[in-house]
Image (cartoon, rainbow, N blue to C red; front, side, top):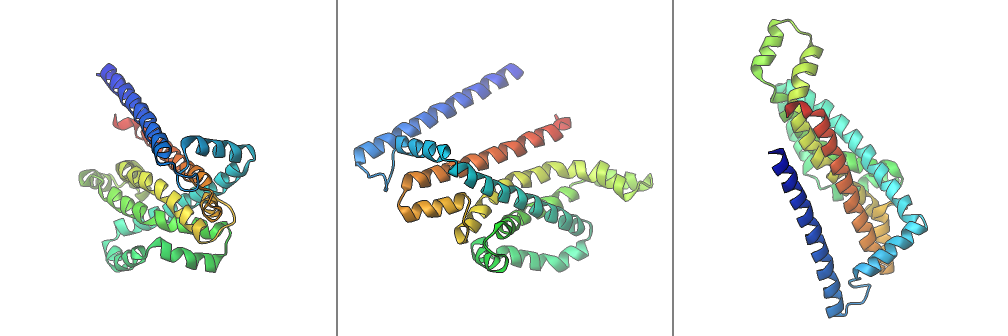
Length: 256
């Protein structure tokens, strides 16, 4: 079975590579046949040349560092707040009934509408972008925490009570292991949403970051630069998602 799994994984990887090459070929053919100017639709070669140019002068890496910091800081802040609030709500249904309408109302406001307010209140620096990321991350992590903690087997919880286990022992040995799979599901969603949050914040007002670079390229009609910035955002989101996936496999290896 393991051999078949390895063969299947290699076949999937090969098909993904073939599909990527085919899409690049289709892109090149579309540009060549349509005779599109670079500011409308640049070809892969023009985008690659622009990528080498901004890598060589260091500007791309500078913007990547800024956006990556915003994403990681916002993810950490939003996840920590969501886990703390989720624990309180999961353990106290009365508390949840009181706060749930307000939490739902807060999350129903689009982040695009909140981002300008955060920039006005906290300035054009990193703090406002980190807060935008944290707000985007908060809701999925809050729901994952509540669902995960409530998925703990009731018979094991009853057993811990019979054994007079401490609140910490119950939390560490029963609730956390039961909640981890759901928490990682929320974290996988949140890590990509954090990238979106950072870009939204940078669109509203920033002097650095990949979102700022997209805005700059739009103003200059430098479409190849815009493609580079967007491609870098995709790579960043995929890399962070794979990091979370690797951490999940490591911490949940006991389930296999």
